[in-house]
Structure formats: structure tokens, C-alpha cells
Length: 206
Image 1 (cartoon, rainbow, N blue to C red):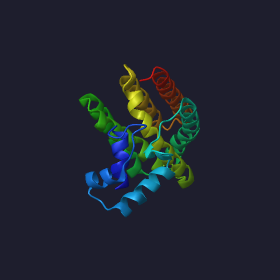
Image 2: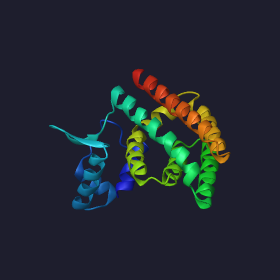
Image 3: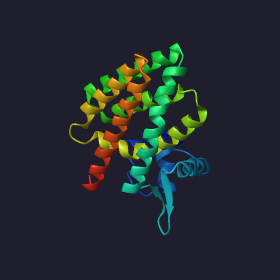
Image 4: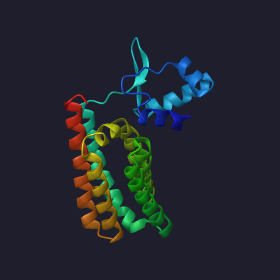
């Protein structure tokens, strides 16, 4: 249930500022109200929805300052997670990361936005799972849930998707070469680029 709601928000079926009416959601998702309320409480804890006086629950609208802070923390932690993946990941996790890289490039070639987001998320989830640090993984997972609100914005910007593919391919190649310094440098550049594009899109009202 909660995964369905997260996916609906990530895919834009529920956009920032949209009200989440329990009766309508119960009918659409074919679930009971107690189950739905539990899922909504979890999404609220994750910062994806919030309770607005006189309106009820709605999908969070992130401010420019929210975005700056999210990407600042993400950049610091995710480049560290990539370095730790190099040191900690087992052969199976390396194989899964390679599959995720291939899936992302294939989805990008097909040009289906929902598949692109799914494949990109798979890459990040694999990297986070293999970093060997459950505390860091938990924090990054929460950040990524919020970043789902923004991913469609950054990837929709002209020229961003080819750059994203190139950046992640370079990161992957540096990781497979076990070059920790290069990996962290490329990761810092990737996150800075994503943050810049997202902030520009938000400033332009896109």
C-alpha cells in the first residue's frame, strides 16, 4: 500500500499541493480506511505529505531552501556511500549494480519517464544497500523518498537526461576501477549538477 502511494507521488499522479482525500483514495486503491491511514501516517513521517489546516493532508511542496538542504546532505552522504560500497560490497551486490546501470541506460533509450525513474532508483538503492552502514542507508533512504518529489523536475529539463546518464556511467566506471577518490569527486559533481538544475527549474516555475 505505502509503496503504491509513494509510486503515485513519484510518477506525478499526485503532485505537490494535491489534496489526499481518504474516501477517494480508499475507492481508488480498494483498501480499508485504517490501512490507508497507517500508510498516510508513514508518508507524513517521511516528509512526503503534511497536514494543512482547513485542507487536510496534501502532498508536500518543497521550497528552494528545502531543496538546497536536501541536496547538501545527500551529496555528503551519498559520495561516502559510494566509497563504502567499493570497500564493502560483495560480488553479488556488484553484479546487481551492473544490472541496475544497464537497466537505467536501456530505460533512458526507450524514453519512458516512469521506467527511467524506477531504474535510476534501483541504482541508488543498490548502492545504498551495499555501503555496509545501516544508519547511513536509513538516512539516505528517507532523503531519496523526498527527492522523488523532485526527480521528475530535474530529469524533465532539456539536456539533463543525457548528462545524468553520462555522469552515472562515469561514477559506475570509477567504482568498478576501485578508484575511491575519483568516485567521490564524480559523485560530488553529479549531485551539484542535479541540485543546480532542480533549483533553476523551481525558480523558473517549471
